[in-house]
Image (cartoon, rainbow over all chains, first blue to last red; front, side, top):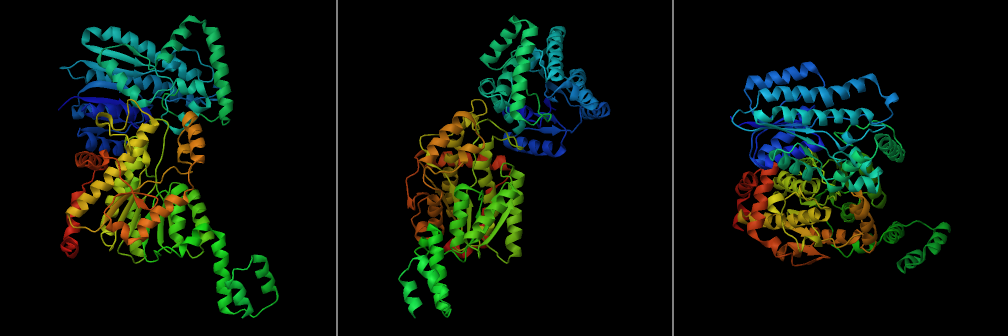
Length: 275
Length: 359
């Protein structure tokens, strides 16, 4: 059996873009997400359009038992992987004091715990004949303390630091780890609304998901530890490093609050990796 | 007698009112005349109704008929007495459109179905529902399929099937729906498939190495490609239909620049602003609706053998859109994407209508 690419959060906006990009390169896929129906539709479409093998298994990655079951499924089928793309992630945007305990637990479990466990397990199931690549989706938000998105931004900081350290640690094992730090991406109607609410600034920092997916894979194949799509976003990151953190937090905070007021509805956004 | 004469001379409404107030004997003839006078002044479409062929006996499907060209087309064809099955995305907008049509034509035979054409599963389901509906209404045929629904998107958005939104709605959905309904269209003496293309299909080509522009998405470029695909599809469909001796014919209609809100729905910023200014200079949606109705109602449109029409007359489509190698490649790719094979139903068609194959 040919080794495959495993993509988590594959039915989301960025996940689909990665799945299509890999399919277009002729790579066989293993997809996971919450919805069986969404995975089934995407899988049959991709396998027919690009003439590849697509496997899928739906799994609630926030759940320990469900993850165990997924790993069992992978082991028992003897699947081997050469690329893991950890995309599944979410955000509960809004004032921290108004978040629920369940939300706090869910964001930690999905954005951090699931990512680490998945990387840990799939490393063991890697194709020994090939270089193994890991792509972790962090966010441009990882570079700033972000009021109103405090949990999300710091969970992404965790992923960013973890990725860089792991990449260094596994270098001798022919494994590369690439952290992707995108700005907002127009993946769902909610995300598009959020980007449009930010006005001009939101629009110019935004990249199309197809472009991001394609370039991220190129960077991962080249063994790069970090990819920030967009020149402007790279400048923003550099600026974030120069300016004192207290000032960054203030600026980011006021910008987000303004954007939130513009959107009026203060409901949490459940979109994958929107910063 | 006096009343009849007055009515025939087209007396102003104020006078008509005074005549009825007199408490005149209401003869059947005079009432009929009054009705038709009022109706013709109610809408400019109605004035032209009597000069055009009626489509009373035709069964017609119109997609995306809740606004713009689709709604105008549905109104035009309702006015001429067609049995219409229309589609839209939201129930609310469908109900509103249906009410609008019924207000103009209380006798209209129109049904609205909801379907999200960005999803190929939904398109297939829509096809099945149309087949069921026609069967239960006692029809064993469909006369006309008008693939009108179209969209514009500022951003690269991927559908549930993993395709770019404009490509899915503007090209794949018509490709799939036509496949679903072709056997019914073959049951009609003058089966017709009409796609809404656009002048923007000129001066463009298909980018084969990235047909959905994933890597370098550009809203207008993506739109132009799908409109080119519509002409390629109509041309190739005709070629394949002729090859199996089917009488079904496909057309692509160029609506010209029309004042609709297609450019406002999925867009923002510059695209939205430019469209707002441009569309003001456009014609009202009734004009392309009349072009579509012309192809539906005039038998001579079929006889010309022309595929591309604008303002009720044939026009030369781009040379690229007539290249058989391109059309075939797009066709095969679309079949893979939709997970269908036209050959399966087309062979069946040739088998079931042997008379036409020889005629």
